[in-house]
Structure formats: structure tokens, C-alpha cells
Image 1 (cartoon, rainbow, N blue to C red):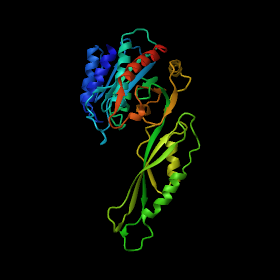
Image 2 (tube, rainbow, N blue to C red; image 1 turned 90 degrees about the vertical axis):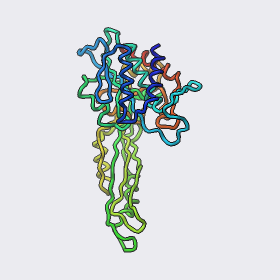
Image 3 (tube, rainbow, N blue to C red; image 1 turned 135 degrees about the vertical axis):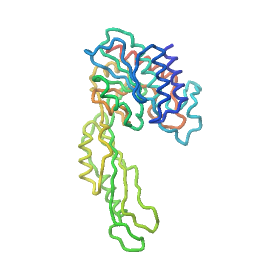
Image 4 (cartoon, helix red, strand yellow; image 1 turned 30 degrees about the vertical axis):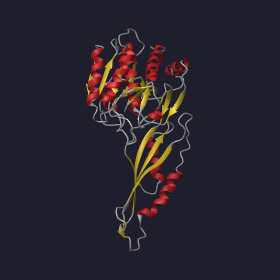
Length: 349
């Protein structure tokens, strides 16, 4: 019954529009889950959290977290993104895979253990908002209101394998300055002509510390914007860099290197999204390996970036389906995910 209720919950969440910053109605539906199982909870903005019944402040706390916001559906959808239809074992719908399947599976896990006494860890369940945009009212905004978190499981689609590390992210805005002029007149300070040198320097950036789990730091030029008329030389060229950081570097050190190496103005939007990891000999990882789960490093970002404790990313579904058209998750993935979550915690609780 718990598993079926989780699947029904996911279908209900899919029916409700929950783009980042507008998750109020999905938060309302999640409240109904806690009310149904008579679990006291708290809510701040569109974030909800609850503690296990026998919470003991003397014990370490294990966070169970996933998010209920979604991205916008892309134009390639051929189905109604808000219709949670199940066809041949596939549950379709926006947010089904990222990360609704993980969220409802973690809620089922938390509910399973909620009333059990004498656990080795306190359990803290957080259904968070604004994860997709790393917003001001995401998990990060709650941390000062929560007890110290000693360990975390973050629910994202990993095929229930163990993402023992996750790359951090820095977005840089770069600016090449020059002199505006009429295109018909000479101009030795055209910022567009400086662009090849800047791109060459971007390609030449060298971060020699390569992680055995996450690989090298990856720098990608993702946007270039300049000019508005054919006969006007612009005064500026704007560039955006997406930098994925392994655990061998801090975001601050990456910022210093890029600022020193690029021959233009560079500004980081934020340094908050650090890489995260958990030791491969941690009892939680060992427990997962005993269940036959593989370890790997994840290139995608999650709410792990807000946490300072050891954290493991694991959940049903496949990351390659995230943000794709006609998103789906297999019902069996949710069923198996709940069972695996319960068996995983059984070994450490």
C-alpha cells in the first residue's frame, strides 16, 4: 500500500504545474501525505520537512532530500506534460524522472521508518523547492532552521547506483571591451576582433588536478552576445562560461585561475555551488555496494551543493531522461527504488 500510495502521489504531483518559484500547489499536495500518515511537519515557503517520531538530539542526523519543482517543458514534447498516464509500465509526465520518482520513494522510505524506535540516526525528510534554479528559497534557505546534518541522501535519478561525488558549478560572465564606431570607419579597437584570442585562452585553460571519480574540471563557452546593427561596431562582447568543478579544487581557486588567465573582465555569478562527495569507505557506500550498486561520479548538479556534510546521490530513474521531451519513469523503477532505499538504510539504522 505504501508503494502504491507513492505512485499515486507522483501522478498527482505531475498533474500540478510546479515550475521553480511556483511550487505552492505541489507543496499543498505533499502536506496531504504527511497528514494522511499523521506525521507532524513544518513548512517554509514551498519547502516541507519532518523528523522521525523518536528524534533524539544526541544522535547524528541523516537528511533525506529531493525536490518537487520542475523545469519548463521543452517544445519537443509530443504528449501533455501534465498527464501522468502509465503506458506499458512507463509513467509519463514532467518531473516524473527528475525528481518526482526519487521524491516519492524517499517519502515512502521516511514513512516506513518514521515510527521505529532506537534508530542509530535521526531521520530528517525535506521536500525542497527551487532546486532547478538553485534559488534563494531552496534547501539552502532552510539549513539555518534545521539541526546539524551529519549525513545526507539526495534523491536524483541515478538508476539506484551510488553517485559518490558530484561536480560543483561556477557560471562566469566575461566582458571584452572595445570602442564603438560606424562600420565604415577604421577601428583598431573592435571588441569582436579580440574574441579569437579570448577563446584561445579559454581553450588553453589547464587544471592539472584530475579526480579519479569526477575527472577533470570542464570549462565550456556557452553564450556569446554582441552587436545589434550591421553598420555599428559594438563597444562590448559578452560571454558566458559554464565551469564544472571537481573535488580537487575549491570554487574560489578556480575563480582566481580564470581571472588571471583570461585577457578580459571576468565575474563569477556565485561561488556557492561547490563540489560534494562521500568517502568510498563510508558505511552508507559500503551498504550500497553490498546491495550490488555501482559507484560513480556525477557531472550534474543537485541540492548536494548546499550541504557541507558527506552526501550520497541515489534515486530511481535515469539522468539522461531529465529535462527531455516526453519525460518518463518506469513504475518498476519506483517499486525497486523504495525497496532498495529501505534495504540500504536497514544496514546503517
